Length: 328
Image 1 (cartoon, one colour):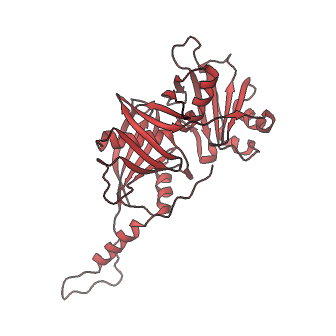
Image 2 (image 1 turned 120 degrees about the horizontal axis):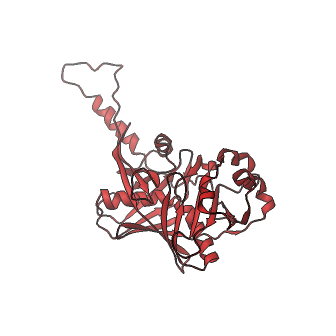
């Protein structure tokens, strides 16, 4: 899915610059203002880096989170996300002038990759909730985010944050249509099932149950080649997954996720992919409660609870590793 255009946003940067220019025009009585001199206002935005779906720094999936006191020039969202160069940068904005990051319970939320805006990002939503709960000390038990995927909720449960996300069904996919893409991803490995989620444009490829976690972890993938191998034009993300421990202990399934169409060769831990995986593996395993692990190089664990209302609760931990300001 390509970037979806939100309603036009009021431009705060123009106002700030105008105020700066007005101040620059003032001078002491009897002095002349140099004609060529211009003073530009400086804008600062609080920014945080949060590792999501982990309780340890430098693992899980890092997301940048920006707190917007005022609306931002539309093009600056993408410029900042490109500057941060993480799989997603989240922008939390106040919905009303009187809102407060420590007291309000509902905020706007958008997500950008280094290349474009995306309609859903789980790990950056988790990171955003962590900034509000743990850094801003938000006093509410539940936070609501207004997003391109509707209203998403986050709540604290002990040492985890639980996300309330849509549950997406993946339907049987004709192998011949995506055969070249699958071969580019897994070579001659045995594929047990192929599904496609039209809502998220994600292709789910289940490897044979004869393969263990280590096989998926050690698989060398050149995701850049997916761009030329995908001929249908409908795939924007590729999930590789394998069944977990059949004894009922440990992880129920493992996965890796690739989205070069969004400028992300491999995403370390992906909430939106698990909104698809949760539906699939719940059906395959006959379970509502599952423990999943995304076995990228950084790795991350997700606790999953599939609900009867076509929603899924995905819980994870976080580690805030950077606090600062964007200045421009």
